[in-house]
Image (cartoon, one colour):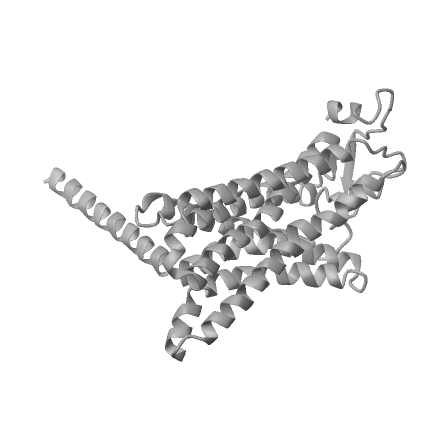
Length: 330
């Protein structure tokens, strides 16, 4: 970051506070119940996403390119939940409102990276469904493990570079007025607005991020499903259309759960009170990681079959252990 700042001038002195104060939930009534709720959501997210990753890793039948993206989504959800929820509970439940400067930048980087990657991962899953339905004969050529891994790796590179640039630009700001961040985490938009020097590069990044990492992925997904709709309209029977569309229901559910609350918050931000906006965004951050594994386990036949098989083998192994211990006693 010092090398980054040196490019803008060698003798510039930036006012960097020792800490930021995160004030998003302070003063809101009955928040202790919300923190308990966040804790249970975190535990469910932890168990669910770990289970999905374990099932995909253990079952050789789940080696299709689609499950590379599903595994990555579970990993991102797990990482995002671990980066956000424990720190939020530490800040507001334990009263550690003062977050050190460098720690706040790290907090911002991981939260934004995971939130951005969730949207782009839905693009990767959409690409899989688009090719499978529109070009079924070319699916195994256009959607391979190598292509899916390359696509996901490029998304990771994009979000890491974008958020690293935003974090470096924050280090160029002087905070000589206030260090109170009115959010539930170290929010980029709330932080750069506190600066008392030129924050134009940060405001550009702040406007560019939602377009590149939110609206463009959303438009790609919507356009893809419009194309899929036209293809399904040409399918001969209603039964075939329903069968084909059923393969998209899990992905569509994830899209609605992730994008709908964010779109409502961003499009109606001027009409929504600040406290309501903070609560809504916090729910948007924690709900998808909890629901994604549940949706994929319930709506994906291959994962359900694999999970049943693993549980059955484990049950049989326990029965054998009990029989073995019983014979040993005799």
